[in-house]
Length: 327
Image 1 (tube, rainbow, N blue to C red):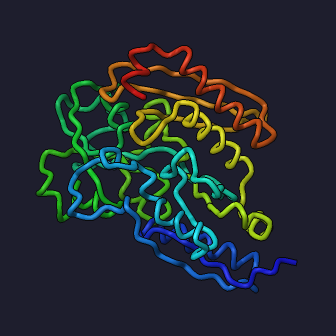
Image 2: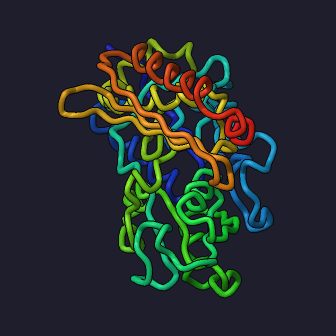
């Protein structure tokens, strides 16, 4: 019988992060009604504010690890018991003493297109008018946009979901008059019940998702594993966990970060085999390397090895000039 009576759940303070934390809280309450849960909101170095301007997170020291730094410090200090994260925002290598104990079933991992003038363009930048400007803070999206249509221009667009939509076609749009479209993860809009904002879902062969996009993970301190694992086990989706493990293993093999223009996406087919695809590009989209492979995966260790082998293959086989520019 589990002896834990209270559970403090750490999270960032954005609407999406809070939605995710409350979702985890409701699942824990459903499975463990005798445990008292509390949401603890933590301001992180990665949280955007207007004073940051339109600067990529990758241009700031620490990269996307800034989204988790203060939360992870709270975990290690024991001020919170678990932390809820968007897995795509997590560094591929966790700090010592921490681990991902649980990954929830994955939402739609694909990107979505939002247009300033709705209905004027389709989901593929390849067909978009020459020379228009696209807003994105993602190096991956920038590279894939330019690979499809080198005539396009990109401008950095930061902020939470609502802020970015406002900059595109809301009250802040006059400050960004040149911007015709942006891309957002479909999962976040689905969770926030903002699917009406989506103009198109981008096919994976047009824009391969970021590693772990659409997945919510729960991070814990490793020395609390025996007590917390039984509580979190009912929330875990093994196939999602295996896919995310493989995708993150590719990143680790490449020493990848938010500065790396790469899409990585793993899926299980009807035959229960995992297919893993990777697409590495230069930031300007002018060089790229694609690779995919398939394997029977029955454990997290096998998923880790499979992903690492994919990453090693890219390092061996991709053109040296591409690797130098992308990594």
